[in-house]
Amino acid sequence: MMLKSVLLDTSFFLRFLNDEDPLYAHADGYFRHFLREETTMLISTISIAEYCVGGHISELPLKNLRIIPFNVGHAQRTGEFARLVFQHRKKLDLTNRTIIPNDTKLFAQADTEASVQYYLSSDTESQKIYGLLHAQKAGPRFQFLNLTTPPSEAFGMLDLR
Image 1: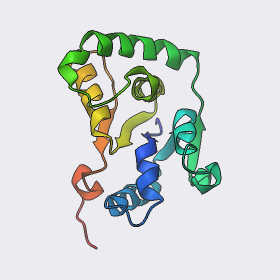
Image 2: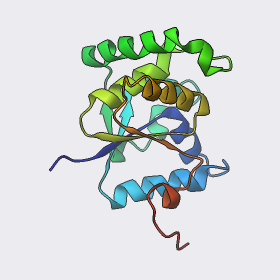
Image 3: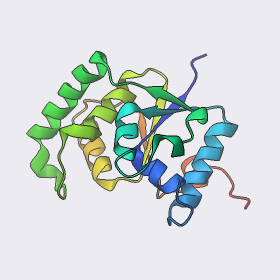
Image 4: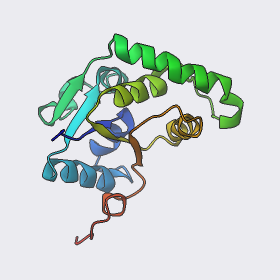
């Protein structure tokens, strides 16, 4: 039986670590759900770098996360994704966004890691890129979870709070 995992992007941590953020309750709910379901939570070295722009690595809940470095296999898949995104970027209507740097890299990591079933983010621009890749039948093979959707809705659970 293959273990399931989720790749958490930087926007997840920005909300999860700020209890005044409007999406904090959703982030906390997802975190608890993944712990309860024994879903391995992954963080990319790319997200760590992004987080460290304004925060410190010691603030991240690393004891509950598995760190995945960006490697050659991820780089190759990034090139495939980025090529498609560049070819179709006019369809995306991205606001002030550089395409390759992180979205396609994180998607490539999630797509390449066999256990990843979910990618969790609140980044709507990133979701546009995911949608384009899906529409082009290029993958990705994981499900994009938007943090604006409560975990009870995403997983069809009763919210008994």
